[in-house]
Image 1 (cartoon, protein in one colour):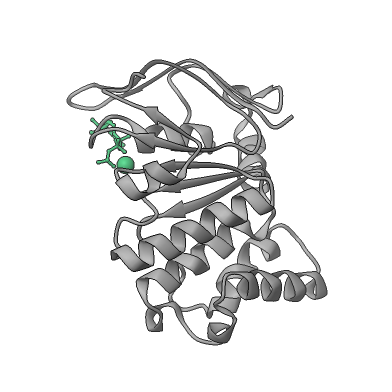
Image 2 (cartoon, helix red, strand yellow):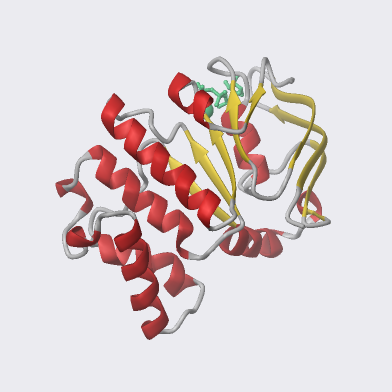
Length: 220
Ligand SMILES: Nc1ncnc2c1ncn2[C@@H]1O[C@H](COP(=O)(O)OP(=O)(O)OP(=O)(O)O)[C@@H](O)[C@H]1O
Ligand SMILES: [Mg+2]
């Protein structure tokens, strides 16, 4: 079972002013759930996603994924966890502009040490299923925002991670593109039985997910 259990998590950022971004946060997200994390700006949505994705370590508390507490992982184990279990999608697409669409999607597979034949097949099928195969040899800057976001969904799905984390994935898109990208993202998550967690303000997304977790000042 790829369940995510978040137990008494605090994230306190240091600095000139100390910010309590997550305060005694508890939640359970089951395998295959499609959930949104909603809340005003500064309520801790991105911080929570980063903690689940192993990008940030909570100040205290536990995050149990598949019965392992990832907050106890060594740095190298955490790198492997991110590579093998987590796919990330951001508002600004995070594509590499010097790489073609094909190369962008192939990169995580190369890093994971996959063989060339496997990579070609996998990338082609992902591009096909996200309806962007015709852009294979072109570069991200020649694509529309919605198309670029579909490429970043392909990148996130490439290594077949169990958890997909999307931070304001439709933030920069117009309504039509938002609808298309989001429907595709949810459709793929459900088809491949992924756990999908989306941090967002977008009312359109909140309607489409199974469950909304409301955050306010780092608390539920
Ligand atoms: N690296 C950091 N250093 C210090 N404080 C931070 C850092 N990152 C976030 N914070 C603070 O933690 C709080 C939660 O930030 P977070 O980015 O998680 O909110 P958010 O809900 O994602 O907001 P938004 O909707 O604007 O993206 C905010 O008060 C923010 O200023
Ligand atoms: Mg944020």
